[in-house]
Length: 225
Image (tube, rainbow, N blue to C red; front, side, top):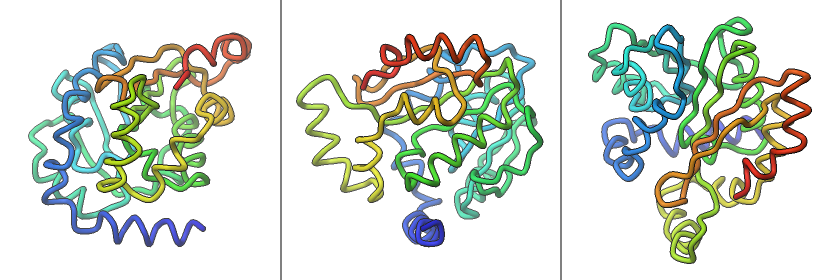
């Protein structure tokens, strides 16, 4: 299963690096909003998972954060490194299911519009790794598609997005996200709809006994899709 996923993703995105930023224009307004919503102190060290060409990483760096972007694809990272004008931003080749960092290394871990491009088992492994490398009092930020509140939005997700998204999108849209995040060791603390409800920014923290108890009571309200 994993081998099939890696082959598919490398074939699908392998040559997209030079044009990927053009594909990201529809969601470009979310990057700065993610930084504001994260609301981390400027001393925070940020990990941007599945960074692609680095747009979300650059949004953090622009605000003075130290950020490391990681991605599986060399072509994407070449573009990110070429565009990088920030001393506080760096990029590394890494598999997000096996992040090459010690436990509790980062104050903020972020993944932006990438989980829907992953097979279910890969997605779960990535989220657990994000939890592992996030400081106990740190923040995990997840940005991705949600079920839109309008018929037009739902029509867009169902009939238009499959033309430019991977085959994993349909399964992603049926996931019980509250249960997925809980099983990955996260407690959701806030959610902000973006792109007219087509997406959500989800802010979470690693589980503690206190937050786990609170999550069992409130997570349905926070992650309603």
